[in-house]
Length: 96
Image (cartoon, rainbow, N blue to C red; front, side):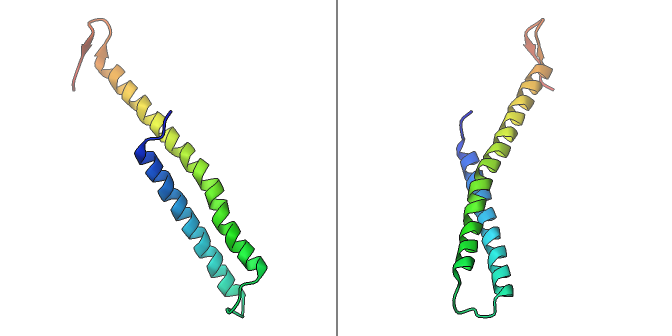
C-alpha cells in the first residue's frame, strides 16, 4: 500500500506534535529541578536531545501503522458497501 499525500501530512503533524510535547515536558521538568538557569549541563542537553529523538523514532512508525490500518478499514468499508448494494444474480447495483 502506498502513502498518500494526506497520510504523509498526517504523519508529519503527529510527529511534530509529539516532539513539541516531549520537548515542552522535558524543559518544564528541567527548569523545575535546576536552580542555576544560566547553563545547561551535559546531562540536561542529553535529556533534551533524547526528548527530541525518542518521539521521532517512536511516533513515525506508530503513526504510519495507525494511518495504514485506518486506510485498510476505509477500503474494507467501501468493499462492504459495494457488496451490500450489488446483486450478483442480476448484476444490478442498487442505490439506497
